[in-house]
Length: 254
Length: 324
Image (tube, rainbow over all chains, first blue to last red; front, top):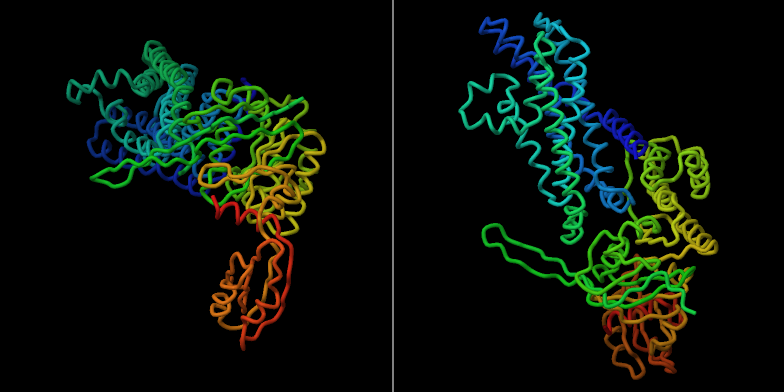
C-alpha cells in the first residue's frame, strides 16, 4: 500500500511539475498575493504585524495550491478519461485520490519557500525560525492536513461533476477564517468556531509559534488531529460516494 | 459443459437526466432494456450496434463502472455489484480514442502507475512492461511523453495498459476507432493473438469486417435490446436477403433509385454518395435476379462499375437494426 502511494505521489508530482500553465501560475500566484500582503502591512509600519503576515502569506500558497487544484485535478482526470480507469483499479478509492492531493500540497511547499524568500530579499522581512525542527514539523503537518482537506474535496468531485468549483469558492474565505493574514479575534465572534474545524488554522498557528519562538505543540497536535479527522471522514464516505457515482453515472463526462 | 465467464441476465440500466434552468424537467433514458447473453471462456464475443444502442453502457456495467438498474451480471463467477473488487482484479478495459492516458508522462510511467494500481509485483514490473511495450510495437519510444504520440501509438499503449495484470477477460470498447488501416490490422492481429493465448474478449466495434474477421459470436444490440445472437455466418444466413447489386452512377441517381425500388424482387434501393459519383445499392429478395432490370432503370444516366455480391455481415446488421 505504501509503495502504491509513493509511486502514485511521485508520478503525480512529475505531471504537475511538467505543466507549463500550472507551473507559471504556481510560480506567480503566491508571489502576487504575498506582495499585496507585504505592501499592505508594510504601509502600516507595524513590524510585528508584518512578520505575522509573512508567515500567513507563506501558508496561503499551500492552501491555494490544494484548494483550487485538488478538486480540479479530479475533474481533469474525468476530462482525460482516466478517472474511470482509476476507479476500476482494484484498490480502494482513497489510495487513488490521496497521492493526487498530497502531490498538490507538496507543490504548495514551493510557494511557502518562495514567499519567505520573496519577503526576505525584496521586502527585507526576516522571519526568524527559532525552532527549526519544530518549524519543519509544523510545515509538514500543515501540508499533510491541507492535503487531507483536498482529499475530502476530491472525494466530493468523484460524485458531483460540478463540485470542482468548490475549491475556488473556498480559497479566499479560508485565508481570512484561518487567520492567515489577520488575527481571527478581529473577525465576528461566530467565525471562530468555524476556524477551529479547519486544519490550516492550527497549522499556521503552529508554524508561527515555532518560527517566532513560542510553543507550537498544542497547535501542531490539533492540526494533525483535525487533518486525520478529514482523512477518516473521507475514507468512511469514499466507497459510499463511489457507489453513488456508479449509480448516478457521474464518473464520465456525460 | 458450459464454461461461461460472462453471464448477463435481464440487465437493465436507465439514466435520469434533467434539462432546463428555471423549470427543470426530469427525463428517464433507458439505455439498456434487459439484455441476456453469455460468453464462454476463450471466446471472442462481439457486441455490434449503432451509436446509442447500449453497447458501452453494457460494458460499463460489466466492468463495475456503472450499477445496473435491474437484472444481474456475473464475470468469472463474481457478481458485478456485490463482488466489484474481485471483478476488477480479473478484467481489463480498453476503449478507443485519445483519452485515458496521462499526456505529460511517458508511456513507461503510464504503465508503471497502472502496474502499481493493479498490484503487479515490483520485481516483475519492468519485465512485464518491457514485454507489453514490445507486444504493441512501442519499443524504443516508451520513454517519450505520450503528448507526442500519434493516435495509433496511444491506442497501442491503451492495449498494453489493459493487459498489465494479465486479465482473464478483456473488454475492448471500439478499440480501432480512428486508427489507420495498417494500425487497425495490427490491432486485430494482437487481439487474435490474445484469444489464442486463452484470453476471453468482449469487443464492441462499428467495423463489420473487423467483427466478421475476429468474432466467434456476435450479439446485435439496438435500442438497448439484443435483436440477434450467433456466429457471423449464422447472422448472415438468418437475414432474408438475396444478392446486392451496386451501380456507380455519374449524375442524379434518384430517378433510377425510385424505379429500381418498384421492381419486382427488390427489397430496397438506396443511393449513397461515393466521392464524385453516387452508389446505387439495390438489395434483392432471396433467389431474385434483378441486375438487368436495375440497369434498365438507369435510362440515359451515365454509369460506371456494376457489381453483384452476396450479402455481407454489414447487410445482415443493417437489416437486423432496421427491422428492430
